[in-house]
Image (cartoon, rainbow, N blue to C red; front, side, top):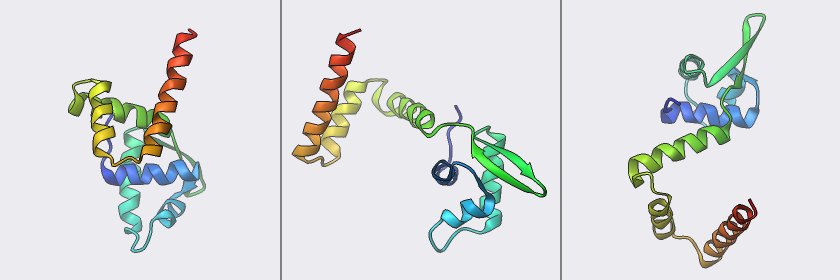
Length: 125
């Protein structure tokens, strides 16, 4: 999966939230000062070429929709980050994350519980 720029990720974030939308709908998601309509149009066209966004034509307008699910992109991005920064080691990533993210004791306990649930699921397999 191709990596996205920050601008492309922002468009995808808005389109994932919308589900489907016209260019004007995507532009309206931006906080003020919003980028120019033509700028967003250029980013959308790049995402179409990268096969992240599809569209249906309605008259002269295009209704855009994501071709890549948010969860799929997040999973692939995390794999890339793990490879680049943590030598493909989930343990190194978890160590960095827990030490560098200023988590509260309560948040750490929640993570611990989530891990315990996953351990129990895998033990049942």
